[in-house]
Image: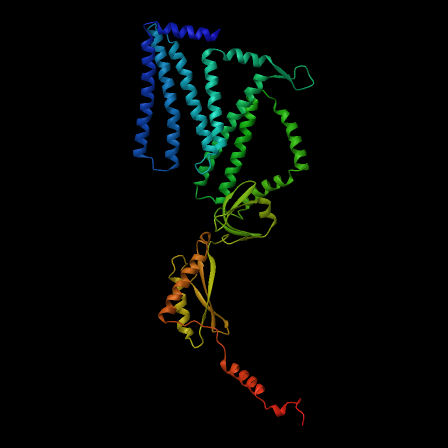
Length: 450
């Protein structure tokens, strides 16, 4: 049996004088590999890396993969030198696939984190998946080292499944497993390349934000489709079988996937025609807020209260959308104030405009303006209008700041607010009539007998 043969070889190496050389070679290669990568990482941090930058995070992740890869290379050289001096190398042979698997696991985790991690956090389900993946990987390494893997693979290859009317239309379980692994690896690489392409495009400020998102989405879709087709061709699957999948997809679209397909098409229309951009302040139906994400199926709208709404893209195409920052980001807001009758408007109106202009978020151009709306029952009703250049931060704070500045003018006596008043003369007339009616002589009463 291969397992007992491996054990006999390792026990035989332990009894030979070359055993310390193998152990020393493994320890030296591991120490040199990790120490070299650590020194390069420290040098990069001091010379190029900035705290929290994506480039530094990428270098850190690559270094985690580079360390075991360097150890594998050093162990290969050490095995060659030991064989040249006629030493047994069974322990070194067992150590090489272990470090290979460590490098592969770290590379897979780097790609998974790069693609699926949102805002630097991973869910519990993803962490559980990583643990299962680690167990499967180390189990495969154990089977390879013990020599049991060829027997298991031959057993899987001998078990065949029929999938067509012809006698030759059979596929083995090993082929299916190889195809699944190939597709998974190619999809992972395609998703990683798509994420890298998206970050690269998002950094190109010369392109419109919607065009950048559209190119990133199209690039990711092309990479995924190309990766699947390439992996299928690698395992020997005829690509003409995809015509069956295309027919099933057409039936699915006809039966119940129209809305999903409509949302995807609407998403690309929004991105290509640039009617919406990330950061725009929009209002649609009963939702209002800032556009934070434009995906191919939905758009995320963040309100000023922090609540995020996920809107289907079809809703943004078929409904009327109010975009406050389509052609310009400047938004007009206003506040109203009532001044008492008798106030010098030629003096008060410029004074109110100065209070709006003094607010930090109010734009100097267009300049704030004051208009006399109407003559109200309590005084002159004035509207103070101003323009804000960052509507995504709301206009309530600006209006509050301006109102506080106006209150300072009232407190200093520079202006006087109008207050509701009652004409007491009208009230006195009614009281006089009521008292006269009550105090009429009893002789005038029609009920009194003569």
